[in-house]
Amino acid sequence: MRLLRSYLFAPGNDERLLARVFTAGADAVVLDLEDAVPESEKARARACVHAAVQRQTGESKGRPPAYVRVNPLTSSHWRADIDAVLIPGVSGIRVPKAEDLESICRLNDAITDRERALGLAHDSVVVVATIESARGVANLAQIVRGPRVVGLAFGAADFCADVGADATDGAASLLARSALVAASGWRRLSPPVASVFTRFNDDEGLRADTLGQKRLGFFGRSAIHPRQVPIIHEVFDPTPAEAEEARGVIGMFEAAVASGRGVTHTEGSFVDLAVVRRARSLLDLLQRVGSSSRGGNRR
Image 1 (tube, rainbow, N blue to C red):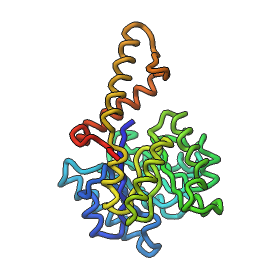
Image 2 (image 1 turned 135 degrees about the horizontal axis):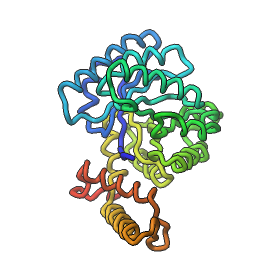
Image 3 (image 1 turned 180 degrees about the vertical axis):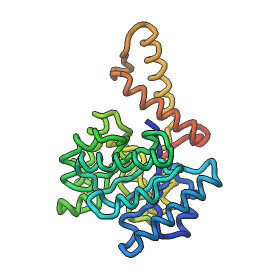
C-alpha cells in the first residue's frame, strides 16, 4: 500500500498540458484518453501520450508516477489504447466505468501481452478501477478481486447521472462511496481515491469536501487543475499527531510480535497487521513528502 495524495489529470490530445503536468507538483499524473478526448482525436491522443511518457522517462528521474486512463472496456478503443501507450514508464492503468470481473480479466490479458512483448516484469503495471455506475457498485465484490487491481477510484458525476441523483449533494453518493471504502478494506487494497471536484475556483469548497472524503475513508483525490493540488495535499498530509500515533501503533505491534502475539491494542482499539500496514504507509508518505517540516494539515 503506497499512499498518494493527488492524481492530476491531463487531456491526452493536449501536448502543451502533457508537457506541464509532470512538473505541476502532483503525487501522480493521469494521462486521459477517455472523456477529455473527442472521438476524432483518439488516435492522435495515443501518440501524444506515448511521446510524453517516453520523454519523461528519458529526461526526469524524479517525475511522479504516470497512469493512463484508457477508454471504457465496453468500447472499441481500449485495446488500441493499451497497445499504443503501455510502455516503460507507465505505472498503471485507470479503468473508467468498471462494472464486472470479466472485463478486468480481459484487460489483464492485454496488459500481460504487452509486458511480454516489451520484456517488462510480470505485474509491473497495476490497475485502478473507477466505479461510476450502479452496476459497478453492485459488482464491487467481483471487481476488487480482479487481477492487478490495487485500488478503486470513484466517479461522482457519472454515478449520479446513472442513478438520477443530484451530483452537488454529497448525500446522494454516500452509500456508494461507503461501499468502495468497505470493499477496499475487505480486500486490503489501498484506500479508494476521491472523485474530482469540478469547481476548480472554489478553494474552500474543495478543502471542506476533501476533508469529508478523508473522514469517510478515502485517501487521495483526482484533480482537474494544478491549483487544486496544494489544497488536496494540505488535507492528506499526515499531521504530527497522526505520525505520532502511527509510530506508536508500529512500536506496540512489533513488541507484541516479539513476545509471540500477532495482535495488540492501543487505547481500546484493536491493532493487527492491516492497521500496521496503514501506519507504515502513512510514515512512508511522511518521509516522501517531508510533511514533518510543514506540520501537515493545520486547518
